[in-house]
Length: 222
Image (cartoon, rainbow, N blue to C red):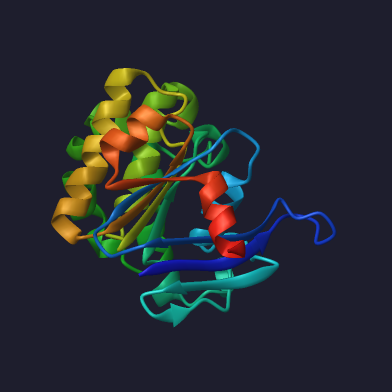
């Protein structure tokens, strides 16, 4: 279970972005979090991905309460969550070729020997050819780079996946390809999904259930 209980978070304790938000995702479940721009969805997604420490509340993953964030989170917990952001160019090292971008998590966790196998498995799943894998971010389109960012999020076979407006900047065909890649990963691993967005039609077609941001916050105070 991915459980966020009465979470308050922001970038200034005197003025939090949101207060008392609660949300749960069961193993194998896909949950859409729907809300307008600026409401705090992305901050909550970063909390769920262990990238932002909340000011209050509790986050539990697979029964273990999270007590460290970012590099302070235990590796065994940190690697259970994969995350894809809205803007791939802000989350990709411009110096790396796409194949090295995808392999980053494997190398960082001492699993270099798995790189060839995982690249061979993931590249066709997300629609990347050998030619594209040899290019750097400035040499590919936003959609192609987002395909690589999704592959990077999947390379460690995470049990939980957080997609924060993953398809917001993409055309319909790329959106369909990335959603299909996520669903293939979920079918193979039983991973749970938190998909954050503002497109109700997409989230309701994609996810088992969709939660409105206003309900997510209101439930914490009820």
